Length: 352
Image 1 (cartoon, rainbow, N blue to C red):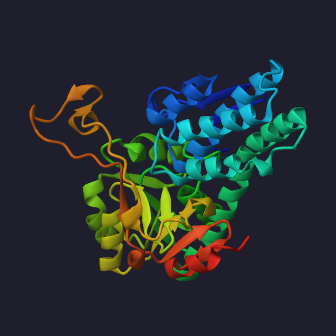
Image 2 (tube, helix red, strand yellow):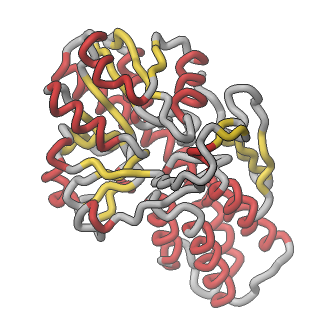
């Protein structure tokens, strides 16, 4: 059974505090949109799919309160409430496109508004918001299965794979994207070993991915980010799979900082480099990676560990949270709809 990072029942939302893992497993109660905003901004929850789900469910909670209190007895007030709430959530971490995509969907009010019937509108809105979690799990399992099939076809039945950052149950509603591919390979007995990077400076790999792999008893080894080339050469790694926070129309893919260099190294060693992400991560309004806004994080993430300073006082710090792997370095983009070459994405723009 995979980890339960998000617990939701109507009227109650709790998230596993990823800032305290792996030492402490503690859930945070989310009661309002502002609680959701803070949890996303502070990275108590992270991973593009999980950010969108927590955003939608925090909106669901607030919407439920309005239903209970019989507030917003005006159609325009309800529409404004929905749009403003989603805009606030999007601003917490702008690089991850899944939250933006959800905001755009719910801003198209005809998808949930029942003209002339506010009660039905509120009920329909709530049901759609609550369906996001189940839909994400279904999506992730399809990603996992498509990815495992593709990798077995290219690499064979003994896959030694490397992954970066965290893309599992802790980054999604369950199962995971890139880590979902690894789960499916393991289920199919095609996985020989997993290598996960520590993912500095936030250590999502050592704190979270390693935690999930140990929890599920998947054979795995943790390495420092700087060990990747040596590990490919010495340990027989024959594939790399990572997630994405935003994929441009041309296939350029933004993901956790360090992803770009993994793609370059994979090209050098002639091993396939895959992106695994929900189709909603593809931003067809973004022509290339040059247009992706890259979030920059606090210098403290780089200069301190556990609150203790490790870098010299006065040193300048550049701390981008993401970088962009160019499309020409990507073997395939694994989605719930199948696996696409980067230059094939544009053909999927209007395909439902």
